[in-house]
Figure 1 (spheres, protein in one colour):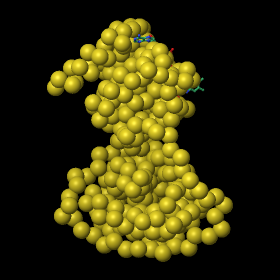
Figure 2 (cartoon, protein in one colour):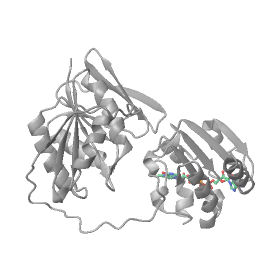
Figure 3 (cartoon, helix red, strand yellow):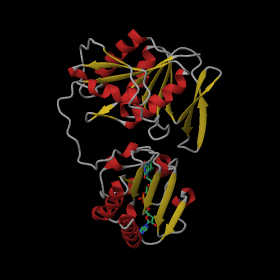
Figure 4 (tube, helix red, strand yellow):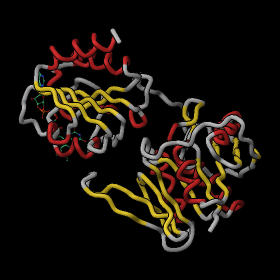
Amino acid sequence: MAKKVLVIGEVRDGELRNVSYEAVAAGKEVADGGEVVGVLLGEDVSGLAESLIHYGADRVIVVNHADLKTYTTDAYQQALLQVLDVENPEGVLLGHTSLGKDVSPRLAMKLNAGLISDAISVEMDGGDAVFTRPIYSGKAFEKKKVNEGVVFATIRPNNIPPLEKDESRSGDVSNLTVDIKDLRTVIKDVVRKATGGVDLSEAKVIVAGGRGVKGKEGFEPLQELADLLGGAVGASRGACDADYCDYSLQIGQTGKVVTPDLYIAVGLSGAIQHLAGMSNSKVIVAINKDPEAPIFEVADYGIVGDLFEILPILTEELKST
Ligand code: FAD
């Protein structure tokens, strides 16, 4: 049965995050031939609406408001509840990002609706959207559906491919004015740590270092390799605890969960807590001098040897291709 599905786009630094397009693709499936409506929130985000349409949204609602410039739970929740009130959708999809993880349970709770978080795929079964999500740190998968009412779901980045971009697609773009009041928190300023250009949670290639890189400067060749591959640098908690890099790079159970196309694990042992954050990567390459290191159990390709010898060879080889 055709449904109306809202997809909440996520804007960062004036651009839509990739997961927004991936959520549109998931939305097409859930809508089952119905309407996919993109929703954009921000201070001045009208210019991004067309892009959502090119990737499959049928129309887009834009909510511009000074209080939506930077995400706060309060302001986004108030604005989105008003959008939901006007649109009355059967499904609502968001990225499984900090924003999506924060606001989706609040919205679902207000609407007394079911929420499926961290979905990696969706298929229709007799008119119901059935989502697959990893459980037990990625060791098993469960299929879940919401039995009645509005279906809320968050989509893990890098799992559902976006639809082909089609610049000939057109759709209605409308503005909605919302009333935001009594905010309990206001963002005065955002001070960002200077990390690399590619967002770790959405990166297609990740070069991750562990305690084996031996120091801050040990991360430099990893950054060089990541840059060559258009990827991002990540780290084990061992490397973060040793102050070789910032905790924002930590991947694992208590860090970021990533699913890149290529994960190169360099000088990290592959502790269970690290695997929890990366074992669903599509291709895993491990470089470790210990042939017994657990990382080799999940690796598709393993190189046993000294990372300080192997990395320069890899980098040179890539430069020459
Ligand atoms: P090590 O285990 O010390 O491994 C270093 C590896 O480098 C070794 O395998 C060694 O053979 C190799 N090596 C050394 N020198 C070289 C060389 N020259 N060339 C090639 N290889 C070399 N960890 C995470 O990563 N993420 C998490 O989110 C996380 N959450 C945790 C939560 C809890 C509650 C707990 C208790 C722990 C958590 N940990 C997490 C920590 C985890 O248990 C490990 O301690 C940590 O992952 C180890 O980091 P490492 O692999 O860099 O270090």
